[in-house]
Every structure is written in structure tokens, then in C-alpha cells.
Image (tube, rainbow, N blue to C red; front, side, top):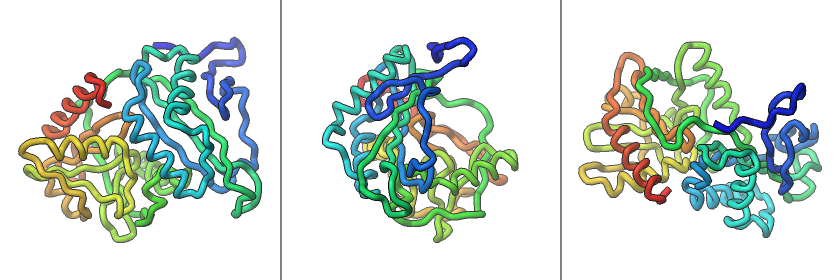
Length: 297
């Protein structure tokens, strides 16, 4: 697997894209007045690229544009799908990762200036990369036990559905999960309905019915969630519902699984005293990988 560039006693580094210029990550500093740092006035998009092919690029691009509009950011005229795609691939090539699977993160923040109220809505952006271990999605046989996180709740509004830099509920849930020996936590919204997990959307399987919380409940509008909704709608013998889910339904389910664009599908093996199978999760993962091989991702 390609490695970051070694610069001797200065350590290892990756090249990043800073507002269109490729520089070493150790050469770029973040100003204390950066609005993403100072006020969380920023968002990000996490993307998987396999051997130079950006998976689900159209969905990523339109989610990024929609998120910037929600945050009232001024979208540069240059931010076309072709421009950003070229920026991503050029950076991957610069890091010698064209034959690898790569995690790409696009950060967008409003330019510094002002206090809570910005001086204007123009933006700056950064793109970073990191190698992944597998070209396709896989499912591990490891035990994956989760719990509910009830210290804080997700708001049922539009801001919760985008990948903004305001993710303290996820951060605190991650600390809680780690301290208590769980792999992950399920987040609830202010109505006490199940929303998602710390790092992905949640699906519930009971018989031939598959449920996932609706975006209106405050869950992230996940890219892999979108792919699976399309797959399941066409899958004979199964019915998909976007519907509110109570925590009491979780223990009645046959399967629970988490989806995100980096890891794919992660089956949950245990919640409280209930243990789950992963038959449907593995079937869906097989279909998803087949589509990626055929270039439909």
C-alpha cells in the first residue's frame, strides 16, 4: 500500500489540496480566526474512491451543494462536478494512491471575518486523503455490540441532516461508547425516536420488512443510505419503509445494521440481551459490491 511521503526527521506527511493548491499537510496551518474552528461554521463531505473511481460521485456532489445552500454559503462558479472531481483525482495521484482505495474528505468553511455574523458568505476549502485497506466492502465476523446514548439528543431539523462541523452529540456518544466497552451507540432525537448511530444510518430488518428512520426525524441524509433505498425498492420479496422507529422495536428485530460510505454495511450482533443475524446485510452488501464492479457506483 502506498505510504505518505517521508521527509526524514520531519516525519511523514500527505499532500492536501488547500483552495486549489497542493501542499504538504505539515505546511498548512489553521488560523485561530478560521470560522470552522471558531464557530463551527463549516461542513464536510466524506467520499470513498476505489482505484481512481469516485463512488456515488453525483450523490456526493449534490449533497455538498445542498448543504452549502442550507448554510447560506456562496457557492463559487468554479464548483462544478467536473472541477471538484478533477481536484480529488489530482490529489490522489499526487499521493501515489491511484491503485488504492482512499478516504477523501472535503472541508468547506466560510472565510474568516465577523463574530457570530460573518462579514460575507464566501468560502474556502480543503481536501485531504487517507488510504483504506480494501477495494471493496467487506463484513467482518467480529462481535459488534451497541447501546443507546441518552445523555444528549439530536434535533429534528434540517441542520441535523447535513455533515456540519457541529457534531458534539456524536463526539460525546463516542466517548461514552469507548468508556463502556461498546462498539457504537444509537442516537435518539428529541422525540426519543431512533435516529442513527455515531457514524452511520441505521436499518432494521423484521421478516421481509426493512425500516430506516426518515430524514425528517433528524438523521443524516447518508449517501450509502440512498444507495440501499434504491436497491431494496427493486429487491423482490422485501419491503422498505422510511418510518420513525422506537427503541422498543430494536429488540424485536431480526437484524440491525449500520451503513456509511467508508465501511459499507456493518451488522450489529448484539443490543442489550438480543443477538442478531446478518443474512440480509450480507445479501445487500453482495448486490452493492456487484454494482460497484459494474461501474454503477
